[in-house]
Amino acid sequence: LRGEQPRRPEVKAFRRISTTVALAVLAFLATLGLEGCMSPPKDLHMALDQPSGAGVYRVALLPPAKAPAINQMHSGNVKLATPDGTPVHGATFAVDGGIPGHHHHPPPLSVHGATFAVDGGMPQHGHGLPTQPRVTRELADGTCQLDGMKLSMTGWWEVKLAIVGPQGADKVTFNTIDFNPPAGQ
Amino acid sequence: MKIMKSTPASTRRFAKLMVALAAAAVTAVAAQTPTKNSMRDKWSAQDIATLGAMRLTQAGPRPPDASNAHEQRADAAAFGRALFNDTRLSKNGQVACASCHSADLQFQDGKPVGQGVGTGKRRTMPVMGAAQSPFLFWDGRKDSLWSQALGPMEDAAEHGGNRARFASLVLMHYQDPYRAVFGNRPALGKLPQDASPGGTEAERSAWAAPPAGSRDAVNRVFANMGKAIAAFERNISYGASRFDKYAQATVAGDARGQEVLAPQEVRGLRVFLTQGQCVTCHNGPMLTDHAFHNTGVPPTDRVKPDQGRADGVAKLLQDEFNCLGRYSDAKPEQCGELQFLASNDAGQLAAFRTPSLRNVAQRAPYMHAGQFATLGQVVRHYATSPKAALGHSELAQPGEKHADRQTIRLSPAEVLDLTAFLGALTGPVVQEK
Image: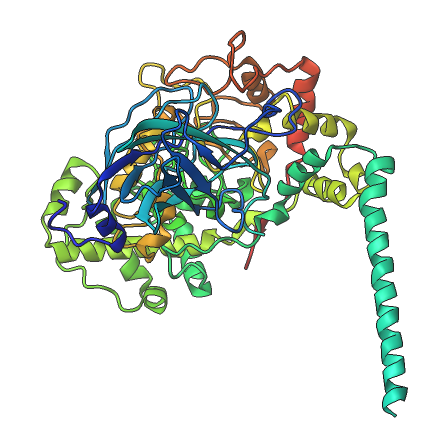
């Protein structure tokens, strides 16, 4: 399959891949302002550039320059570096969204001839991402493009990335609060 | 002369500036003072933002469907209207799209499950709002309006027909409109009268007989039927409800405008946004998140419960009429929903599409198989939050420790208030000519 089919430029980038980074994006949401229902914790850590849990990597989630509307498909970037800031080059990423409350380990997903490993823990409850985002290409300096993101309502979203690379496996969690109105304005 | 001219000009500019400042001051007063002081119903800034996002006006223009190059053409819509009402497009000559999607009945049928040439398994969904949804049917097994329109044609319980018969019929009876919209008719070749890859056993084996070119031509005509019907359907939409007027008044700080809702309806709206947790999924201008959820709605067949989205995803990926298929007019990169489809997710088991709540009081019975006869029963279902018969309900069951979702608890009065509020979501059905 991989050798015979014509490849897109983005897929060619995966040929050089020496690192495997499995990103599992698990999102669940809660609505702000629902007195007692789903307010996010007051001490929510909001940094979008932070060391991974065990300090193996430094990971940055770079949202699009213009904040996406609710239910608008959008792209962002993920920047992966070692703790001293050296970009981790040639990584492949697999991204998965899931409905929290259900432990599932889907099989590796083959897309456009590149094999994507899928990994990740599950938040206890709530909603998963409405889409299954994935990294479609590697940009310069260890930055990869994350496509197919969509948030189905305003509020608190949690994005968890499980990373497997040459330096080892690690995880990182980003919190993001989306206030934007629905698409179509 | 120059000086003479410039002086009045600068005076005018100054006057304009003053008018602008005065207008801004008036706007600020209008937006803030009544909100804080004289509004009948007081809402937090976050609530006002949520209500603002739920106004129908926020839906904006209907998004174009890249997979249907003909959807905005008036001649395609006129052709589609004729097909929508044509009972010849059925096995017994008595069923048209309009049979179950009646203009007199909110473009649905008011029955627990669809009744075509046979009895279906799911509740008929209204046409309004369909053009805004990325996925169609309760299980989202279709990803466009035109592709959706093809499904019932070959469903044994609905039109009960097959694409070979319908393609021939359309080319015979609609020669001119077909050519006007889609160009010259393709040569169907020598075809069995009844043939389809998804019909009865006889139809399936007949489908294998003609050459691939004939099958492709049939599929092309069949797809074009759907594209014409979609062009008609996309002009059927929801109009503004009393809730929209209320939300607009609340956002604008219009105290009198809030009177459009009765106090009980406003109490119901507060329940909707707070402990009822309705807004978790019924949000945005269409009052739906366009996603799929298992909320423990009891299946009608407990022996073989409906698998909902889990089956829908598999069907969508295999569908030759999906956005990435050869009969779609979209470029692959325009098929984001399909390219980034969430699949392989245990939460999709027995999950169903969140329906719009617009005009909901006008279309009992409720849920994916008409399980509940009244909105009161629907609300009490959520207040009870039973365990799912299949899969796992996303609702927190009573007594369950939940990380980020509380059990829905509603008093009998709150059930009544919430039900009353749902009645305020009714507006006209708008049909563009």
